[in-house]
Length: 351
Image (tube, rainbow, N blue to C red):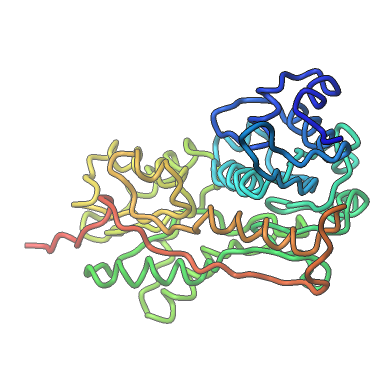
């Protein structure tokens, strides 16, 4: 006997209409993660194939569950939405492929699945300690790291080509006529192993500028990545110490939060952007287009990074309806793109 929506409703306690919309991935329905999982698992267990009356369709039930581990807490993501956007794009990509997602919870012992779900793959967003990676490994050995690459021999990874992004931004600023170019961001950060390492964007900036014989150490401003007020304070002090004709005519910033702090500091000092000073930012989330002036930014193609991570983790997953397509690891390096907006212009030539 064919399994019907009414049978699924009786088994799950949800209405036939809700079950039909969930199984068909109706984007207008809002249900919780647990509800969606119950419906898909029950349909898979009972062998539901879809279709009733005059309407016949086939419901694809992959029954694959992907765990998502995040480096930053929700509160930290509010000050640096880069990772929040990555997670949202991962969830969207999984949804489009009819794969379920669960958020893995972090505690002092690492990461865990809150409901004991079977995990067929994990996407780990950001940097993680050896202890955290070991806890993820206990949940599932199929791990894809997004925005880091702790071990290319063991894990798939998707990272951004920071050096190319810096080169694009500096080539563009120089094409406008800028030679006095500064950088704002930290010298070091926590790497894939949670150890302090040179920050890749700043390292690439300094290398490029030295190769071009344009490096000016006083134009490099040391600031944290996620503290806008610290950026404003440090840059304000630094700019007050420059002579009128010997200050940077352009800045490259490590991220959008830093760029916004830079804009506030420069406006407070009476500088106009971009007429007096141009700004190029990294990340290119929606913040870049809504700030005033809109930021010229290096886009990491967050949606493509996330979709690539989902593709990689699916290729090595094993579930009731899916066998691994690949048994070797892959590391994908995404080339960024320069998006031009209103925060950059040619430098004003002295009279």
